[in-house]
Length: 396
Image 1 (tube, rainbow, N blue to C red):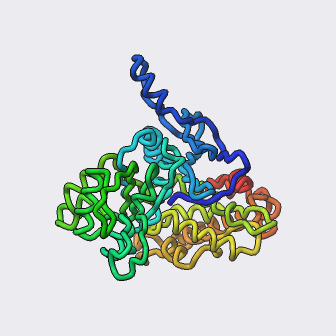
Image 2: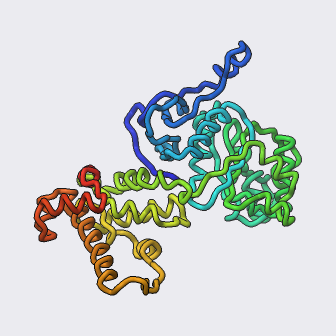
Image 3: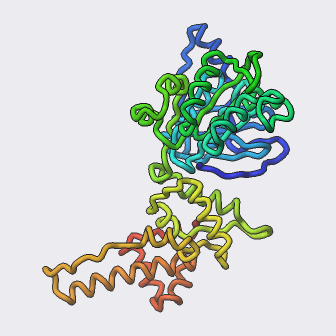
């Protein structure tokens, strides 16, 4: 979920401004022969009152931000071009009421994107109602979506509105839509076609004005091919599709997210923990099957476990260290002499030690010299030999 929760000041502004509700402007411009080509979006801001997305061309590599969840602001931070294209699409789709299908692995931020879309839309003053379709049985899901009349079943002691009705003039978010049972798929299809439904046990049609945003961590096309998902429902949902890339395909975002989470999980009254360059290397080498959610948990754990002001490799979860440091044993190169192999091994160890000591001292030559037992001139020579940027270490 490229994600975090950050409280903001009274004006509700998330840094880096400039992207407003431009749907009508784009519409008017297109009818006056003015080009409406959208520039590449590299930078975003969300205003909370009202929540609006504004896009602009960015001259730097600033991370992109998208909005928020229930009274706070959940930001999706990214420099990745694919995510930039997604934000650009969100800005345009927000001005319509088209159904949106979001596909992506667990932890990539599907609900955050859905809420961003709602907050940027013309229906933002209406409710956003979420339903986890995988968590409910078929009978409960029907009642949850459509509501029921009093006496519709044994425990129906009173009339109850369903999620479609509650989301009127807003957005209904159907999470894990790929897990909906076959019978319910048919009923959902009818609602999407007719934009009306009947409560369980009722006979009166109820019309609704609602945007449906569906999300799944499965490929619906594959489910259709395997006969597990209705093809007609798939095409009703797949009006605008957003494919969220997994974190392993966005390695440039990992340092941004790690620093953001380090700030989020700083102990009360303490400065934000700095992250050692070696830690960033380890984070970027991990596969992140749990995506942004897993990264957030790892940084939260590191912030809680570290005693100093810097997060070091030993502060990371053990499973992450095992996955990134495990190496298969290799046979020695029998074409080299033993002294040559020992020299190579010593060089590797020396470089690792100097890097660790520079991490420990934040790149300060004098303190590194004391730790290593080498003079400052030797330290400078080793930095050149191993291509180590001490300035970057000081700024880490």
